[in-house]
Image (tube, rainbow, N blue to C red; front, side, top):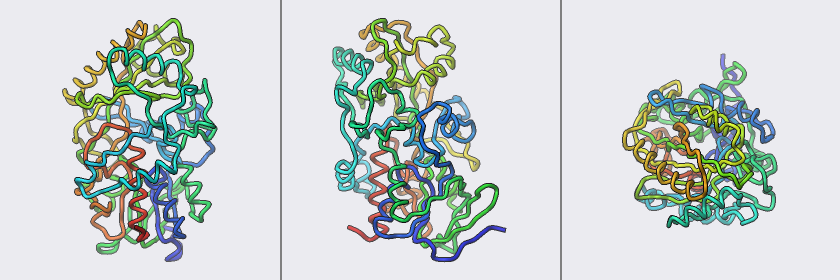
Length: 433
């Protein structure tokens, strides 16, 4: 028997606490709405340790998933704040023209967020020596390699620090938990360890949700439901709720890292993705990507480069992220059925050759590449397919707001886009202009 609370306790239930859900929760509570936030993960303080990230970010079958054919690893964070806890805090401008072609204009919301959040390139002081060396080498080769905008409170950021990837414990890196905390201060209720199974419906209307917590099934009702469980989680919930076309033909932003050792730098602790270049015509993005030693060692071991396993502090690293095509499916249990095409592999191979030249010019030797990884799964509940231009599903009162709604592959970190969509949706739901 499911436990059920009284009716009309909440104005809205938000499933998931990543950038999309956190933004909607924050904005609705600012309008005095009673909001319940359901998060599958926990809410432990962020310590910035590999042990903690292993618990919420690389747990096989939960936060660490593999595609069926290429055995490509895909990471997501099951924790309050979602994958923004372990992202690299890079703020790329949204694809405004693409979204406008689907009837979605977020230009006003983008400008609002740029005033509210700490979006700016890193200062020279905070740009690490490895990122600088790679940038200088790329520019010498004629590439438009420039500093990238970051979601970082630079007065709180520290030099010689590698905590970005592990979850910043200093409050320097903006993450969605900050919006969740603000929503809770405004009166929202946050329930963690709550795995939502489905949205409850009555005819053509969403009326609540069913979730499990510590083995007990609960039901909560509200006149508004927002699914923000991410590119993998949201289609599973939608499909279980009767929306059978969710979870098909999606993107995953495949990537590899290229690494090479130099003899005149000893570092390895700096903000990753400090600078880079979008090779749009070639279909990929390239940036520096200095990762923590624990992560580096796992990457080198995976490709059997044990001769490099203890060279982290002298290894320059470049990430190549390519724009893949919409294809594949998510299974009802959350399996990822998608493999890399020859085109995907060709773009990454092209980027690898370019990265080699950059590293060689920077003085690197013993250059090698990692296996395939994936980031930012999206397009699993696309605008004009699963949701309309206001992010509403086929059910009244049921909306989706996360990377799953992006209607086309984009190939860039989507955080600013998702935050802007969240702001726009909250305005729509509250009737604000």
